[in-house]
Image 1 (tube, rainbow, N blue to C red):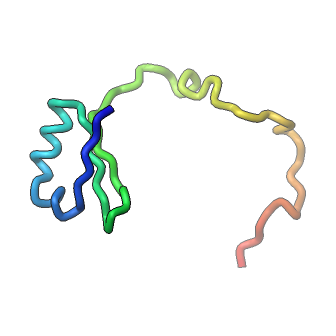
Image 2 (tube, rainbow, N blue to C red):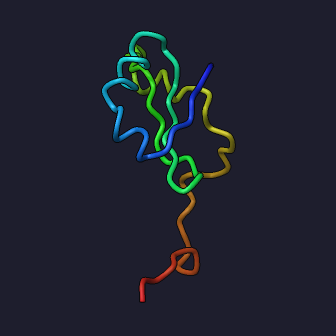
Length: 78
């Protein structure tokens, strides 16, 4: 998928133009802050699948989910 990177100041000056560009062309716009990507704007596409269907097949490891958690496994907030 084609994408364009713009700085926050460029985006602020032409936000509506970038929104229209994303809507019409489907291109992704990545907004950067000091050279680092921070926000990605893309066309919205509804996903008709249920949450269960979207998560199906996403479990990488299933060891023993019913095993109790030991006290040492929790990090106390100080």
